[in-house]
Image 1 (cartoon, rainbow, N blue to C red):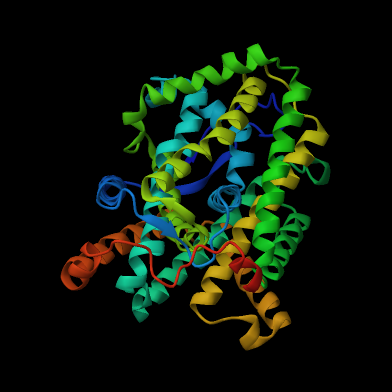
Image 2 (tube, rainbow, N blue to C red):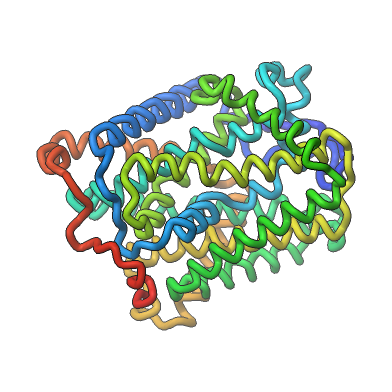
Length: 437
């Protein structure tokens, strides 16, 4: 199979991205490109149609997970589990220069780079997470599609693969932030060590669910501190912030253009979101704390988008004014990125080890931690070397969506249409999480 490496030259005003840097993914060419585009387009339209159906059908149903938590904790878990290091490392180093270069990328010319960045990460796209969260909380306990052996194995391969892709992104982009350790571009041996230690720590934290709340609230707090610190360093006043953030309006006035792929890069993002969606739904569905169906959708669309909008606005101000980032800022961004990676790995490791019964109770804590760390690090290196691609994982997830829908229509249609409440065993008891390990 032939492949096309997508390359772009970016400026180095922010002391993060070296010029002429390669993108982190490969694209198949000729007929395979069209097939993947058609596949992701069909998957997106199907997902949004299912979102509309679920909200209309079960508008006022109270959604309760197996270990419900208060709203703020739920949003913190969702935000930090549903996003990864790309949120910290992509905008300044890659995205803003790419979107601003409309001469070479005319598809982005219909709005400004901030609106594009927000559209790639915020608001509408979180509907994917609503769909899977609602499904695994309310529908899957009656359907049990993901307990079918072959589906269970495919699902866990997806989880493990996407988990490793998160590590690969961290490893690839680490040199551009940890410039004090290398030449700002090359992945040196020390970065492999750092990545392994991050995965090792995440494997340890996944041994007890109490760490989920600590990590989620802690990383949310660190992210807010990073935003405020970079805001203060930039010298941006409230008026300048409001003026910069106003560019996000370009997203809402063109929201329909973000539904289907704009470019290969946007398509890459959409496959990435699909790959994440099915696992994040499985994980976060545990923590929904009694919201109505429409409130779950509103919470997922609105609450994560607010800090995203603020963060991107601050970074866009840096981009517009060519403000160089200091060593301290780069290190701070790297630290927050590390915490985000740990959070993502923690939730996903817990998910697939529970699904496959690869627990500490069965193997002991040390074999559990080391085994997960070694396997995930090996897969991380595989993604980093382009041996694996996230588009393949996203395509498999779309296949799972379609297969699940066919299974429901063929076997469980009456049971699903008769659903009027969350499973009886899911009590709205916020103290449950204290007793779970």
